[in-house]
Image (cartoon, rainbow, N blue to C red; front, top):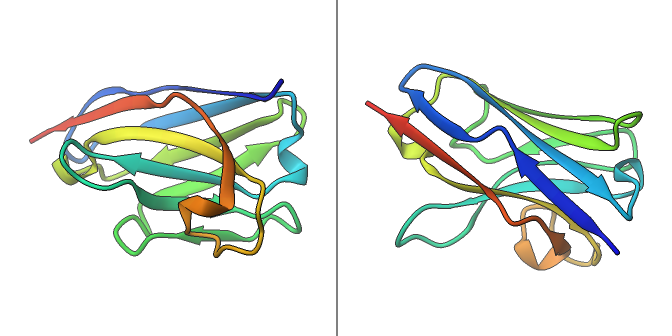
Length: 125
């Protein structure tokens, strides 16, 4: 049974940092493209970042490029999202996901078949 468990969310001030973790069980993160998505109240879910299984290539949404960094620790079977220079617009529930259908683009939610429950990130101004 696949489980993705996010942690590390919370309250941060604008300009601050948080590091989210996604601990996986039932799958090996180095064999999957792993992504982070977020959903703010009243808004659609949006792509944040992804790291490919092959070579660890990373992709970012324009809104977070230069501020967020996705990485993985194969030994811990965990994926991370380091978030710096946070703004109130980053407030959302953040979900990690593992891909199951590579026919979709890396930023498409349809690519990802395994999802975590999410962790809340709130950034105050």
